[in-house]
Length: 480
Image 1 (cartoon, rainbow, N blue to C red):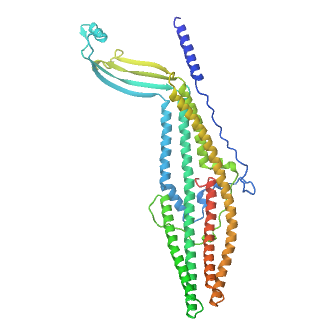
Image 2 (cartoon, one colour):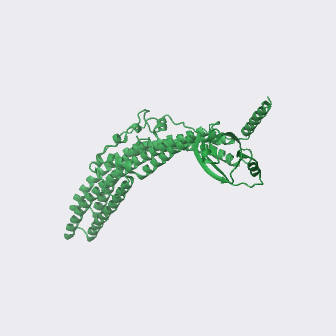
Image 3 (cartoon, rainbow, N blue to C red):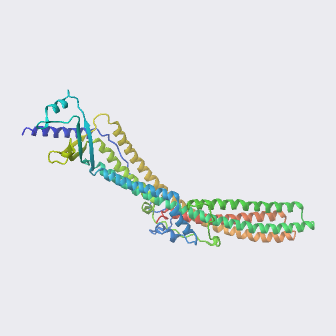
């Protein structure tokens, strides 16, 4: 009965302490992310739920060599392998956090010798007592012990469990980060591969044009013999041939650098890249179904990564807030202790045990935990803005590529007509020049325009394919 008021006073004191802690926690405001998107993209003629992002990249790319290159890159790319190790570290963090709210049990053993002063409390006690009748304490006094020791922090405020959930979300976010890296890697390799093929076609076009110009040069030399043209015309044609011959080496250097770039992405040293250059101009870009904007939230790995990071930041606020509340722990131990090894296993004389409970609450100078709490709140707001930014950026990328595909198609059609007209005009100009009915400058200008137009047509075709690849990436395709 005498202990009852004491328990009541302790309970009241604990309640008051908790109330004081709760009242002194700073009031902060979090941010809810705005994930609203338009019902359809601006450039869509009709709304459809079909989405090319769900198509596996092996089915998306129709090429004899490109799939093997992408497979090699996914397996050997250094950035992908680095990201895989980060994922492994994030997974290990889950295990570490989970272990924090489980009891810690350890085994301990020790031996010591103690010599206390005679004119001390311990010395006086040992002097006046005997181990057995007629047998005094050894001096110095040995001490041998071994046993099991345990400690357990009670997760009353779910601080440790929430920290484990945060680690789990960060682990899943790291997986989405790798998926986003793979998406970009697939698109980058595909773009570089088709750009390399476009350079092959540029080189072929240049070689064909050089042959035409060399023929024109020979005709000019013949005409000069008969005084039907001047040496100036011969020199201008020679200069034009040399100019285009020098351009060949510029393109060849671009090919070398592009091949080396692809090899770097594949995680290997420079070597020739096998490719199917023939029929490049006959490639028809695939029809890419954009679906509806809301599907970006599911298909884009970077959006899902930002969403998980926001969820982790929300929980981190609860983890930081729990630092203001008292922490509770239980400590226990059981083992054997004796001054002589012969008595170490004698029970119950050598048996020892301990059981204790702790409660710790921050009262004075809580600047550190307040700063951590405020930083957690600021991180949550930052994560919300980052999530919104990622969504807006994804929508913009898709809208840009949809518009790009439409404009490039119109551009390609007009450019094709231009090339046909200029190709025919080159033949006409050559015939007129041979019959002295056209000046050499007209021939030079016509050949130059035809070369540039065909070069631009090849470049436009490459941009069309690149826009198709980039739209596939922007929709979230390439990692499945």
